[in-house]
Image 1 (spheres, one colour):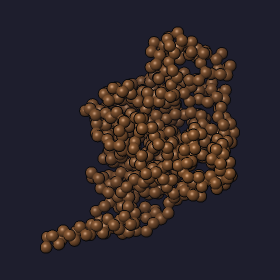
Image 2 (tube, helix red, strand yellow):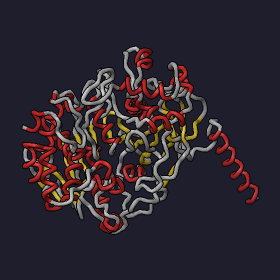
Image 3 (spheres, one colour):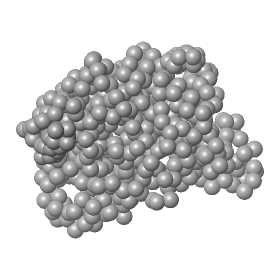
Length: 547
């Protein structure tokens, strides 16, 4: 009798699994389930958490929907299996030798899905929506680095999203603008992120989340995305706070007109279409997605937002200067060794101190003395690494924090300066994205799927990770970062407070004296002369910049 009963239980479980896989009704109550606006989903219980993966937040952007704003997902009947990640958005192969390499996963244009980690009994819980990095060209919400369990154990409903990448996410073209009701194109990846936030507002309550307490969080291209979400009128009201890890505020193309030394976005799209022999938009939509991505790589297509006057109304620096950004609290920072893994951005160091000083005078003119005070000739390589870091990340991050503070919002600044043994051995102290295992609370834990990443493994690393994820989670919950037994993190304010995450968190004032003012002056001169600003390491060509 016992054997027969066991067989019956196994048979019932098998029927349940078949039904879920087929989208049919659940026969067992054990898997966590939720009813959302499109239907019912069933996930999995993992270590006391409810986890749902691969939920569509928008219709597949395929066929005629390629290069259109995201549409609502279709409804379904029965129960949808939400135990596996969705496909990655189509992207090029990542260099296998890179620190950031991950083995390829299944890819598809049908990739607009999200994942949720939720406490077992969440109710009106704070929500984080995570936007992955990868230069708006690579990346996936399925990366093992983005495990939301640590946040869920701290009472957060954690959501990670995919969004369209590269040519498929950021192409502008006159024909695309012509079929748009607003006469614009490009920014599809940003529109995807906005659609995901709208989905969260409609549905996160079904998972125990509070739609009125949503924090957007991103790193690198995800941080850039979060900054554009702060600037976009389309995203207003969809989130209450922002966590921004290593953003930038470079100039980006305008839709129809050349600006700041760049071609218009539509001209770039036209040239790409011509390179593919696509005579019209229908032909362009018939091109295989992987062939499109390959063509974008050959053409050195830069995936980036487009100033279209609608989704992105202006350059970031202008929007924030006018005070038109979302007035929400921010927590933002960058890493001391950002560009140690981005050496292509850094000019070669001159042969000696005299040559270095002469080169800086040639590049910066009357600003050379300020440059040399901040980035001296005594250690030329380290000075150029620091100067490039600050031109891309440091200045933009402090500018964001300053502008939010000026707008009357709590704004918190950090510098990640932790160098653990595996990173030190490879000369990669505090490299770009190295804060991620700490911010996600996974440092010191084995992490599969990241074969080249120098993983932190010591007890000091685990302690710092516990403190950092505490700060991040408490900011998302209450707008004030805190960690029990760790220093109080004061808002930036007039004292220019910031937190250094080195061997442990240390509260300080006045990050890199003179850095912000110098980089701001360079940016203002370039902007005034109609020149691009990004690394700010090319010569200042316009005469008024150097007199």
